[in-house]
Image (cartoon, rainbow, N blue to C red; front, side):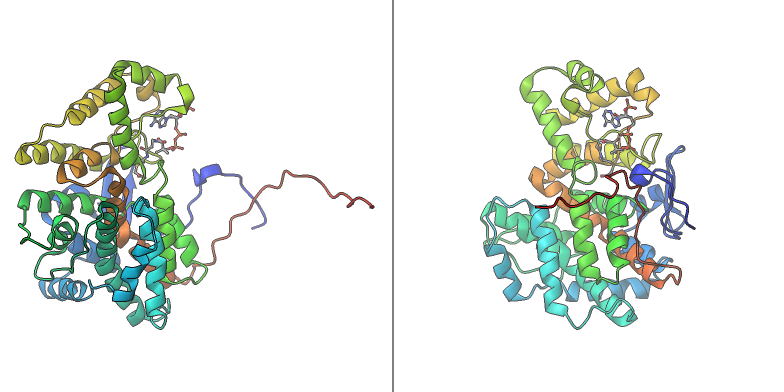
Length: 389
Ligand code: CMC
């Protein structure tokens, strides 16, 4: 309308209308398509929630069975794409591998990427849901110097993924229901979170007419930063450093409050939640349950609990309404499952994939969508003459 408002970090600007996810940050409420996150996490599966996010309603039993079956049928990667992994160093960060491999994946399906063709969009949705976890597991195997396994499509989505990560060619993989259930729950908790940085990235890239692979690949890169999905990795590194240094939790919290070297309490604070993150509550319960049932005692869990308690009682955190977010306890669980720290954000990406797809599709179906193109307030030089030479 010719009037420009300056809004760093889009703190006050809505970029779209959406029907997918509702958050009340003051009350700590999160709902996907109207269903409370607590009920979905307790009763549903990753694929069922993916369907719900994408299509707006829970699937019927037949719809879910068919969807599950289609995803299973598309887990194989083209053999040529496997060479892609050989071109990268084994030290490559799996998030970089994931976003690059996804861009590369698009080259295999160049005739199936029209954002306006519903059948092609559906096919790409299935391919992404099926193949992203396989790519992620191969990035993990590559970093360990181990052989890639073929997906076993007799297994559930989550067990297939766990086997691809932790199985080997020599022995039969044994499903561990504790791990399966915990991972399923964590993935559900991550599936959507309205207009967060990575989802907004997916929408912005998609608003140019770019295909779903390109948009999701950009979303993965946005997620990689430590202020966003990278926080789950950063939390575990922080806990490890506190433990190694022996400085004690109270001293560390003092350093955070004094903003010494810009050190932050990772896994705390949120742009939207000014109350306990409802996801963090569920993750915290899971952390204790999973470690107990696996018989693991991890001093880092005790450290995290101590850190949380001290922070929640401290005026600095109270005044700023900083509470644990979803990333605070997830790392402890992923570690107990056997994932290396650098895989944590990759697990977040697999979780968030359905949300990214749902938003990209919602945007493409909305007749009001325009190419995303923010304004700026120019504060540079006025016109000047190029010097005569
Ligand atoms: N530790 C210490 N101080 C903090 C923290 C923290 N984790 N988070 C915010 N603050 C302070 C911040 O310094 C500021 O203080 P002051 O008013 O004195 O300058 C005040 O609280 C307000 O914070 P802000 O940076 O203006 O808040 P924001 O909405 O721009 O940032 C955030 C939100 C999540 C980026 C931030 O809280 C943060 O950096 N947290 C740590 C990283 C993290 O855990 N990220 C994961 C977010 S949840 C899921 C996800 O996206 O992955």
